[in-house]
Amino acid sequence: MGVLSQFVSGRRLGSSSYTQPSPFGSPSNPERTHVAAVCYRLQNGEPEFLLVRTKNGHWTFPKGGVDGDASHAHAAAREAYEEAGVRGSIERTPFISYKHCKPGRMSSRKRVIWVHAHLCEVRHLVPPAEDYRNPQWFNAEKAKRRLQKFRTSEFAAEVVSVIDRATERILYR
Image 1 (cartoon, rainbow, N blue to C red):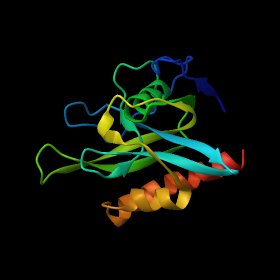
Image 2 (image 1 turned 30 degrees about the horizontal axis):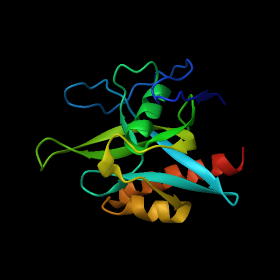
Image 3 (image 1 turned 120 degrees about the horizontal axis):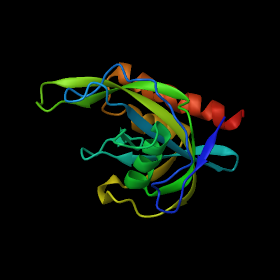
Image 4 (image 1 turned 90 degrees about the horizontal axis):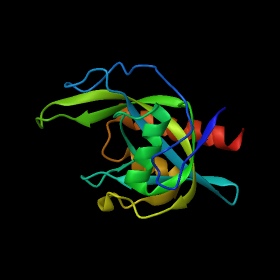
């Protein structure tokens, strides 16, 4: 299991690659891959997860598209830095992929994308570039409840599986 260490700027990592294409890309770029950083720390031997708010006030993982990044892990680390102010270590390969429903350009149209999630152990936090994100720590159960809100049962189950799988990987390495 390879881990990349993040530089102070939050923009550079060691080399890695991950090339699995996303089956659901954006309408303007169907090959665009989406990644998330599942940011965590251990508190009293239990994982806590760092979630951020969307512009609509919903809780989510720091995530976004791979945009000219050296690798998918680099993109996930960049998103963690921009959205949550995270400096830490991120795994080279995703530990899970999940479906996410992203609002479309027209309010009546929504699209489903695959998001490839990378575990990111948080070492240090700085204020995020996107100040409305309001990053907050939650234990696994509270994180699941926050992530389930405002999602259909199908997409709520997807994010719950991310927390469950992350918890297993963190505690049973």
